[in-house]
Length: 123
Image 1 (cartoon, rainbow, N blue to C red):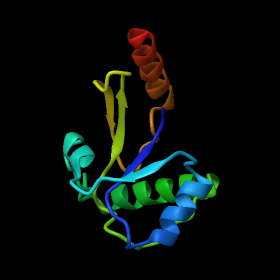
Image 2 (cartoon, one colour):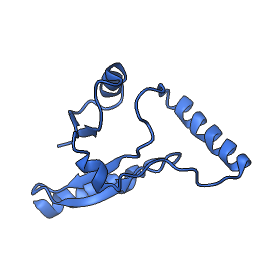
Image 3 (cartoon, helix red, strand yellow):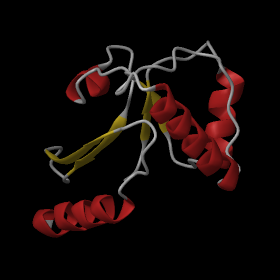
Image 4 (tube, rainbow, N blue to C red):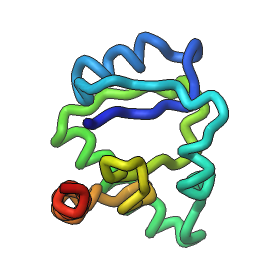
């Protein structure tokens, strides 16, 4: 099955409820020990360039995608720790991991292919 993992509650529960109702209609679990975030490298967003033109262009592109997808957000919560996607087989073995890269699209086709592969290997 599909489920989500969050690292904090009680900070922006209204935003978390909106996320679940508007964007991710699967169960969400709180990862109090941050095990999933540790598995993904417990990475934080970082500036990849100090060139102000690249930074401006990157922010503009992200803003455009957010607007096109009609995604709302706020500045509540920690917000800098990057997440990702881990696909497990039916035995609980991690078969694929995608680490979030802020500013880049999620590789949906790769994730679907990995899920199908994990499902077929587990059959």
